[in-house]
Image (cartoon, rainbow, N blue to C red; front, side, top):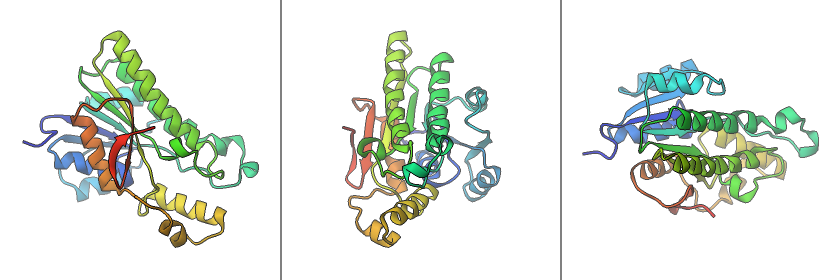
Length: 248
């Protein structure tokens, strides 16, 4: 029997990149998987290439999005992997709209879905996993605006939501997972590599060559499966080429 057989997994931001790898990992464990995104063509492409995956198109920043998603498939495991590209300019050249982009997307989506999971509430034992970033632990580069702070806030949201679940006796499990390295071959990763390399005045391949202990999207997917099926202690975790570990 596979680890997620008979369980529902919903991946918000699941049409491409790391989110798609997470959805594929859950499918390999025989879960019923629904990928959620606002990009209908990307969802259609995923469904065409991957028999068995369910898809649902919605803008996850809308206040009504969590109720719509949960009505389509109530999750045993909910993964929030949606977000905006980080800004790509020196701090003094950014305006507030650019600086706060990840707060208005990554954090807002995480807030809306954590809130809905608590208020509905989701079924006892459900796992809610927010995909953060290693930038939440390192601070990220200075040309990335509010990205690092937004990804750190996702860790705080997981901890706050867990305390609320415990206080209310809901038996929900909230966690944040931070992939520690930028991942080439993903939209977010390639954009970040291009941006940081230009800021540093080096070629992208030089930047990539300097990164050690890199994780792949598939390894992030396996880390999510572990968090969804095991009983790890704590609310914040990191995944690198060395595997899954508590986040400092």
